[in-house]
Length: 119
Ligand SMILES: [Zn+2]
Image (cartoon, rainbow, N blue to C red):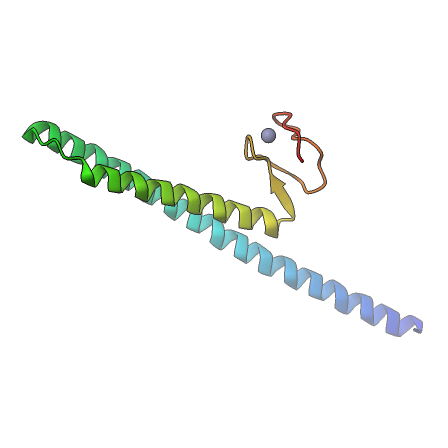
């Protein structure tokens, strides 16, 4: 490959890398917004549960079916957040420590934040 061809190739390649990086950034931002939305849903559900519990206390009701449903919704929301965080880590080419959730280099052997050893 002659000099100019080689240079052109490098410039084109760099352009692609930059484009890929910004697509990833947009994707990461979207995922972060989705996490914030899910956290807001959890907060709302918790508040509704508190109100329902108080209502039950006031009326002497003994059925907490709606509270159980709310707990399941919250479980599902936390699972969704985990999933979204895992996708962000994948895009950023890092892994999250299973113990403390801090982001580490993919080839790290242990967590530099909490000392957890990685398999
Ligand atoms: Zn850790």
